[in-house]
Image 1 (cartoon, rainbow, N blue to C red):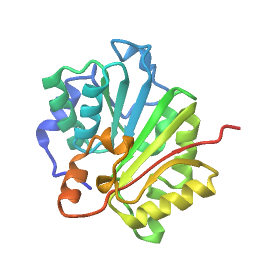
Image 2: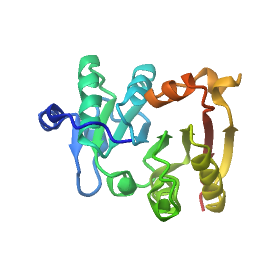
Image 3: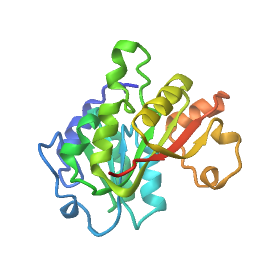
Image 4: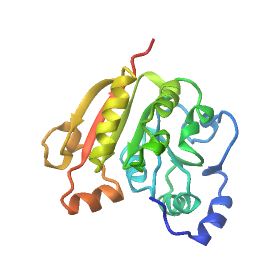
Length: 217
């Protein structure tokens, strides 16, 4: 979902190269980007306004996070809020999520978050879905042996597609929930909501969630 253009965001993003990488080329030395380089690394592909990734960084100071966003306006909103909180364990990458394996080294990421991704419902747009096989291959390249994907959406069609796509890729499911907010388990207790999740759940939409990992060859 595209945000309205925020002219101030461009200037803010460009003024903080220590916090934001703008469409970089090649692998990034992420250890040099964080105050504590030895912590586990987790990424969110398509962070929107950043509520989820910011709350994750606040809740888990012993983990480093990277918010990946294609829109400059969205990256600017994340940066604005991050600067207020002075989070040393959160970086922002302004770039395309389909290129994650060009930004991160092999087996360097602990977890990939996919939250309320654009469903791209038309068949001709299948390759743009963040759980399409080409995206899965990119995540597989950067995830550690015990790393995994956590995915949430309110879109049943995208959820069903993602189940099939991951199954066809021979991934293993660790957790599947068809109504996250009306469940009572450890995952629900630890759930951090996104902006869209709060909005959709208030409207009575079920939230679908899954955790899955790759079978390393």
